[in-house]
Image (cartoon, rainbow, N blue to C red; front, side):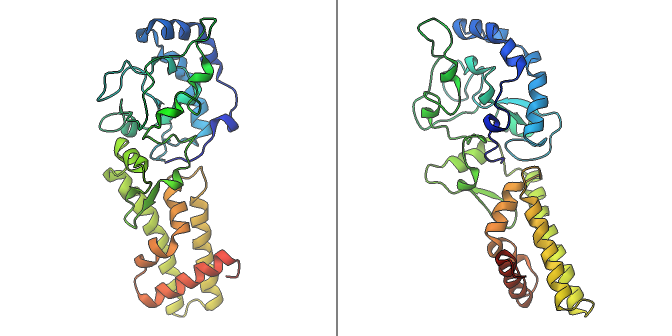
Length: 286
């Protein structure tokens, strides 16, 4: 899952197409006129979101060059509860993120939006009668007080909510169960994601073992082995960058290298060599 993308910092302005729709939004908010929501408004929004999210789905981190414009809080209804949907947030910048169809559509998120706190039933209006746009922002009251189970990629530090195993499976770790609910809501352990995340790990292991075999066959000396392993570790660092697919598991792997990568190394003797080399790499002494 994309973490701390902070649209508000990277792109502090609201896209013009959303601003242009402000009059329509007033009507939608005052009259619950969900049928007036126009998909044409989102065309330029998609382009901006693709740039900010490096063409990645905000939930699963797969590359998606024509993503759905996902409404974090669903605009027309909420699964499992009697609620009209967050229609007044249909053009709210902080409520829009890019999502691949698999995460956004059934059996993925769709209109699921379970919460821990009390649900906001409708828009807030100023004394002037205008929609209170400040109250529409995802990181401000009353919306933030709902305490959604679904993590918001621009508000929550997703590293605090997940762990991975060395098969690429994601699990929730926080006491409130938000990480667990998020991967279930977005179906983040579907087969193709497990395969792609495990492939990232397997490629790392294969590269490491290739240099180990060259060393065993005396085609590399000790310095050559160190240089080769350093290249492997640098590649893992590269996978941690936000423009890379599945950067969250790469970050977790970097921070839990002995737990994730070392058991995948074929022989215990090799495991010790690689573990010590990685520690030296982190210390800057490899």
